Image (cartoon, rainbow, N blue to C red; front, side, top):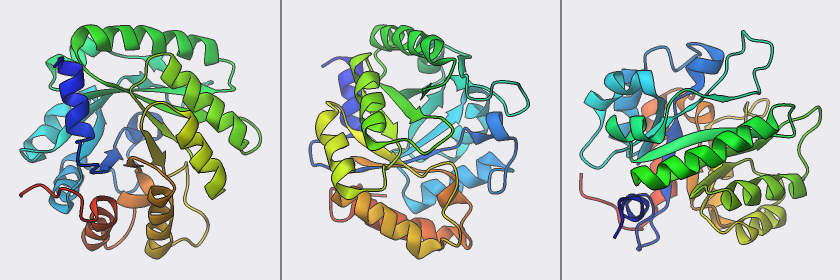
Length: 258
């Protein structure tokens, strides 16, 4: 079994255990937003609640690793842009799969914002990263978003997910289209596991119960897991809520020993 296949097996065991992933890369684009002021403490809370995978920028690895449990997986996000620049949707690579593997990554993450002026360059970066991941034996997760002046249509989300998979991504994180049948269709037409994202912002007035209903519905519609950031780590009180999320995602499927 190759290193890439072995790491994919850890992400998605044969038991069907679903993945509880939390992206913590927001500080590069948005700064130290609420809930992400101190990443080490947050990582410790997520691990204690049963999160499987934490995805961080490469410079945050040293602050996060001391808080990881023996079974916690590490993702390293290699795409970057900032909201201070003129093109925040144009992500560029700031590292390589070989560098991520040397830092201990179980998975490499990159982002492609489809429908933006920088789409072609991001697709080229995705292809290069896929090649590097194969050489390094590390799976590739693509955060595949559709950006534009209006909400993306379901067929656009399906197109983006399939394109990312066809260019070499092993796992896709994408937005829920808002319609159960359309999300099921996205899952069915994407040949790799789909993780549902939480979106750029929570719906107005949404509380913890709304997030849990969203997670329940997405998993029932075929998501292989979740990859949600702000809608999880900005909840208060955070610890009890995160444990409720873990119960939803893992249900009775192959819970590991602590």
